[in-house]
Image 1 (tube, helix red, strand yellow):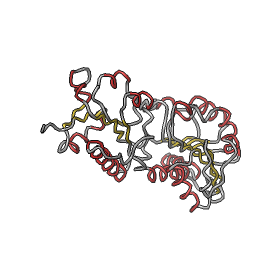
Image 2: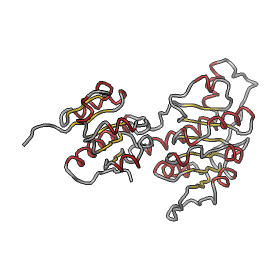
Image 3: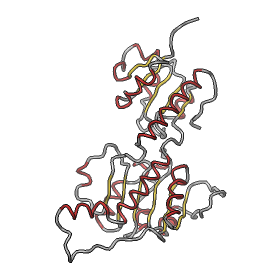
Image 4: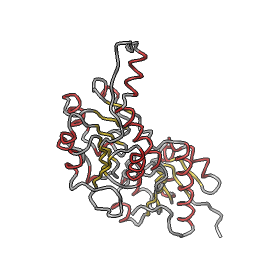
Length: 310
């Protein structure tokens, strides 16, 4: 019997800490040191951050590849049709960071609606005087429309409910078991919301889902919050609406592309921006490591994957 250990490639340099985590059980190879070399045909598993597009040429150069293990919850960078046609399984981190992303979504709503970020800036600039008092908007009673009612959407709705917000949602498929009403269309949801939270899973079919029409339906008093993927929002249309005052505000954790060019936002009013940190907590990363290890162990034991895609 061969003592050779399974060969696992790590796709992106920011996942380098996984080299040490996996080294006890696998031969772990950093792709950035092996790309273009003859080593690629040894790869049995490719560990990747799911938001990064995997080049079909890379997949073709790995004839022994049997699993793409996304370290992340998202897997939109993987061409599922292509890899499945090659018999390659795909796994991800399940719902490892859904609760944290939901927390971040509520934080963005609070930061914008209660003027927390702008208030901090004004205080530091010496603009808080006895005669200057800013009125903000309550969370209780606000109408929250959630686009996409998966794990993140549900977790956000549960938090919003505790804050006495009125919750509605829309998605392409009805979910009768949910306690919150589903709008008849995305446009209707936007029109009847004070805050529109984008929490849908992204793919090429829903790119630009939040279009000019949806942004205008949300309107000059509305707040758009995105914690899903930047590609779901027509970013140029969003910036144009904010500059023209056709949209009340935006609070964004995701952009298209990433990292976003900071100069793109320099003169855009009424925005709160964070650098895709919604799911990036120490606790969530710990759960993602555990899920990766479980997916790899199951795959090499010919057992069902704990968190398969599809």
